[in-house]
Structures are given as structure tokens and as C-alpha cells.
Image (cartoon, rainbow, N blue to C red; front, side, top):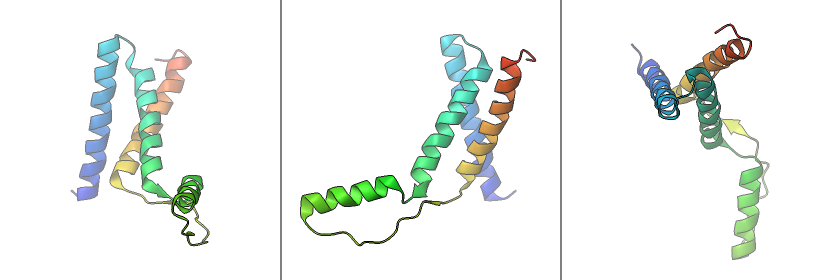
Length: 108
């Protein structure tokens, strides 16, 4: 088995564990908790795995204002770096999204 598959499955297992823990602690249904944990996880991973964008421009402007040294005037395109954790989280989010829609429609 490839090491990337291991990290993806490990990420999914961590998210399932977090969802189960929160669900049992608050005595709620697992499906909505899993959906929101998946949504939160993918948001956090996308935030930390991407580069460029508005936050980069803001940080460059703040550094220039504090130091007086101008930053390089280059275009910062948003770039997303894929990783096994991102793919595992994406799979978890998509599965939990499907289950959440089924849960809301009364099929589960």
C-alpha cells in the first residue's frame, strides 16, 4: 500500500473519531456532526495548504507599513497544494455531505 493512501485513511479515521467523540459527548446524531466536522476540516486544510490571495496581500501591506520596506510587487495567485490529508478530508466531506442530505430528507 502506498504511503499516501495510509495518510488519507489515517486522516479519515481521525475525523471519524472526532465526530464520534463529539456526537457521544453531546448526545446528538452522528450524521450532522460528521458533516460539520468535515466542513470545518476541509476549510482548515484549504486555508493552510493554499498560498497567495487576499491574506498574502494584506500581510505584505502590513509589513510594508511597519517597516517602510516595500514588498515585491508581484501578482499573488492562489495556489492549492494537494496532499493526502486534503484528499482524505475531501472524501470524508463528500461522504458526510451525501449522508447529511439523506438525513435531512428522512432516508436515514
